[in-house]
Image (cartoon, rainbow over all chains, first blue to last red; front, top):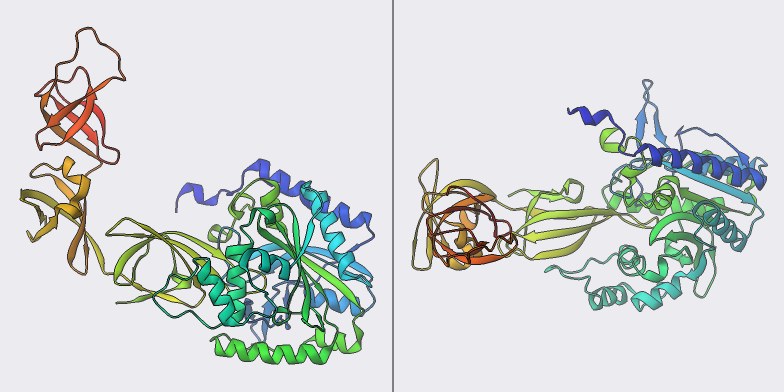
Length: 320
Length: 189
């Protein structure tokens, strides 16, 4: 082990910027009447997502708990119990995610407001970005417009073959092996390889109204086309925040949990517990609300003009 | 041969794609909030030197390439074939002029080089970063010309030509950087 291994990868100037941005973020929410809350990192319940792997923690008494992948469950329980506007800045953990823009443990800012429409939630997110980065208001673009413009396909109607045809046309198919048949993976690939790098997405941009099969915990607005009421903030082509007009229907969530667990099993991932206190809260009644999660480390990365998270974190995962 | 899963992908891995050996030179992990993990890779073909950009999904895998680096000695050239010998077991390996490419300019008999074997067959040869070669032919420098950035061509013992400073004379030994082909210094006078 070399002597340099104990030192932070971020310089002091950046660590000071990080602290100042944390303060400005708290001021932003305090000025708007949001209550700061503080919920457990370790929980019996966890999000069931096909592409999200939580870290499991086994207790001495053999109970298995999970480190949160986001504070979503606990914050929605607070909303169901009467909270009006809440935020928190905490840690989240996602296994397997390490890279220049990913760290298994990261800082997440998440906020919810009861009674808020998706348009109001997008405005608040744009204001927050403007307040912290000073790059101006975010322009809004639907996923359909972005995909039409940059990938030449309609993300709601396109079949898997249509998406493969677009990938071929844009030189994304090189393999001497047949293209895979996962529609959602093609949507992700076209998004990261064709849409995100566009100069038009370099300034603050909110993409909204996702394909319905990517709803996660967002509500689906019936169509045609049916769209998931989700929105994402991009700055410099980097995904910075992800917002939902929140799903409130407990039976719908039970069904998504069931389907996601089946897909996880097919993908060789472990099956996760489907019952949760979030379902109890939703059965009691979750108010109509919107919620947004923001990657704080990425926000600092953009503000610092850095290109990797190592430059803005004291001790990234490889030297944690 | 083994395989590497996307979770094993690291810079420096040697893998096989379409029957060709590649070195993983760059890897970016990308994971959109709505989807699967993607591994954006840049791979350099170890035979041709060309760079390939490919994106792999989490869970995909690549075959490992049987690539081995050995220390060898350059023996001699016979027409379009260059002959080398491994230092430990005296095994001889041949590379064509096409495979040796521009590197012939740095070779001198008995010189130590590093070779790469793919499935046991030699594919490339890398000379040391610096080599010393004797000048056998060059024009005399103009008297009084002391400008340091002026160069003239000089032919060295293996027939290659390099740009050298005006003061270099036949019989001088010069040091060349093999990564750039640039003259570094005169070794004796």
